Length: 122
Image 1 (cartoon, rainbow, N blue to C red):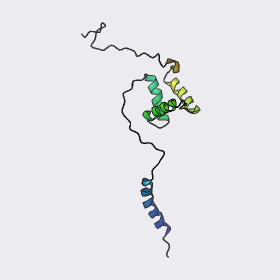
Image 2: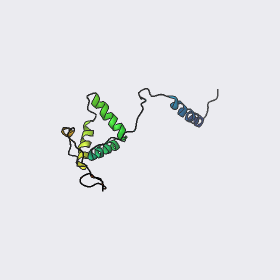
Image 3: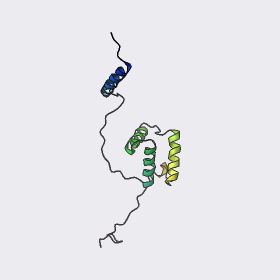
Image 4: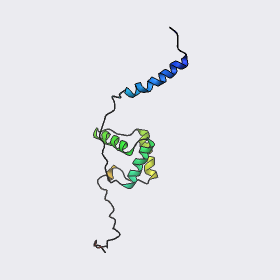
């Protein structure tokens, strides 16, 4: 039986490999339904979270899901290098809050431009 030239074998493999890969299923992935949410959060805390997500090349939602799932299992979601990065980001964004502040945060009340001090419309 005649042998095919090496270039022919390489090009044939290149044709079939993508088809094969697309039929493979990664059994470790879980399919979920995500929903859009409008959560309000302390401004500097959000900046730190966004920067941390960007540093790890992931979305903010993925980062928050990971943090919550680890917390639900009683595990720490961060490695020591991530904790160092968080420390640096907190310093950069002047975030001086820690876990002791978690149930004491009160939002600043802003006056609407079309209301008087008494709360009645002009």
